[in-house]
Image (cartoon, rainbow, N blue to C red; front, side):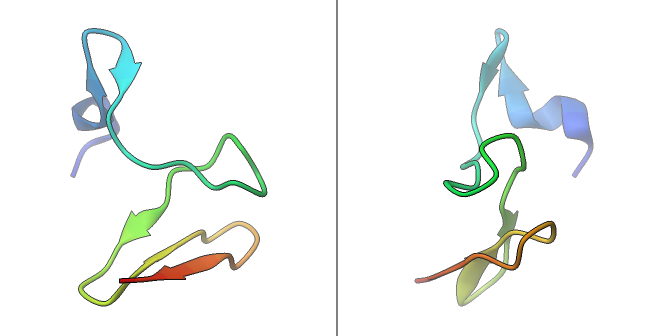
Length: 43
């Protein structure tokens, strides 16, 4: 997915990391993961 597909009318549509605040979480089948700090949310 291209970075510009994360936005809709200037609003971010993807979840951001609660620790980093500026990093978009990668969406995997069983989890969402931050590649910067390692934060993981299990689905």
